[in-house]
Length: 122
Image (cartoon, rainbow, N blue to C red; front, side, top):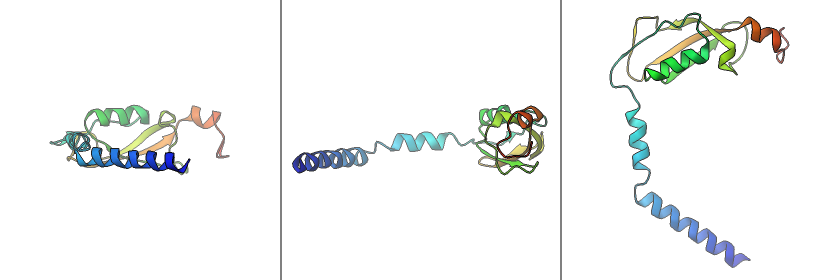
C-alpha cells in the first residue's frame, strides 16, 4: 500500500512542477491585472438603493473596493439584499480613482428587521 501512495505522491509532485514551471499561472495573473480600471469612474447616486444592486452597479463601473458600514447597531452585513444605502463616500458625481475605495453606510430594511430576529434586536 505504501508503494501506491509514494507513486501517487511522485505523480502529484511531477504534475505540480510541470504546471508551475510552464508558466500556467501567467494568464490568470494577467487577467487579474486587466480588471483594474485605467481611468477614474464617476460615482453613481446610491442613496436609497438596495446594497446588492449598488454593489453590482459599482462592479459594472470597475470599482471592486467596496466597504459596507452598518450604522444601525449591527456588526456586519450578511445578506446585501436586506440593506439600504444611506450614505456614500465619495459622493454622487465625484470620481473614483483607479483602485480607489468606496464606503457605503447602510441600514437594515424594516422588512428584514421584522422577519429576522437572529440577533435579538426585534
